[in-house]
Length: 414
View 1 (cartoon, helix red, strand yellow):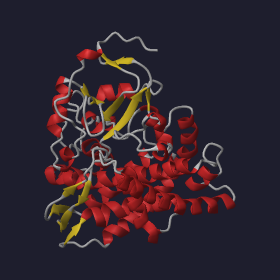
View 2 (tube, rainbow, N blue to C red):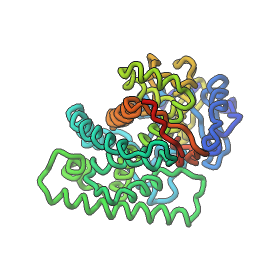
View 3 (cartoon, helix red, strand yellow):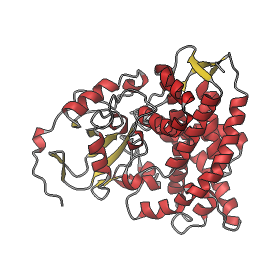
């Protein structure tokens, strides 16, 4: 048990509930978080649609919490990794390796990790470059279309299909399941619960067919085969299989997709940064890191205190949930100068926490970076401006940060 000296009655009460999805759909989250970072980087929200919670909004405090996984739990049994509490017994068993504590987290992560090692990334690079190039070749120049639907989604869904040997003609199912699995909403109605369960069962049924095909075949050097032939994941119960499939779909789809769309937003707000990339393409890898920082495709992660402890001079009680606002930590002025600006030359862009920190840092981080780099290369080398045409709409979520519709027109400048 950690020694606690702080007085729980002196908790700093947050002035704004930053779990309100309207802050993100209306793109007005910046000021509330700037206020929290300046005045109370650890703030208590006694009431919200998701119940009481702590907001952790500074880069340093987020890393501090993530560096102590034995005190601050990610496990679904203790609440999981999002602000929403599991709806029922089924949801409480909806486990995956990012929503597990050690040692199970370590055991399952080791199974998946080889699919994202350097040799695999070298092989994937050729495949991604071909697929992205072919997609960009057929985009309509001089016409209005939805960038999210025509570009961001197909690139990332294509990668998921490749990882899972999933049929491309069934790709729309992957997107639908990903959207359902990643949805965080105050709506806890029985109707929504049943719709969620229906979609997750459809997903599990389809992937179980893939799993059984891999089980019947000799072990191979691919993600699905590694999972099904491993001791740690080969005999997962249904809810855990469901959870891990959902994690790999969401992790490989929504986050990269939202960064790709975010890049279009960034270069329209800061067109000089696209000029810098054209003048010096060697900046593209750094630009990929910078867009993850600037966009923060994952808005938050959640941890739950396993014991009474103390953080930043305040008493944390066992069972209380702490929401780690990555979107705020990535705009922390204490670390990132002129943090609201998208800057492809930012020297410390890689210090972002868009992929998390510590033992739960995203296992597919390098694959996401690689896809973003190739995507940015294609825009730069073709001499394109991608300009808004109509209203853009943002995802209604306090968990993922992105766009649903982005009408644009490609203007070719040569």
